[in-house]
Length: 60
Image (cartoon, rainbow, N blue to C red; front, side):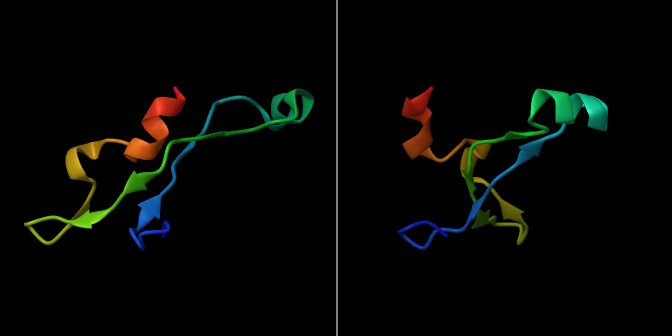
């Protein structure tokens, strides 16, 4: 939840390197931008327009 009590989800982008390559590089995954979740009209969870949280768009 953010400071406005909106539910946020963070993604993780996995890669296809070996565990040894992860160790040698000192990192293994990349974190995606947070997305806000809402209840869609059909009752499923979704993201409005499937865009990242606007507060993070200016950081690009």
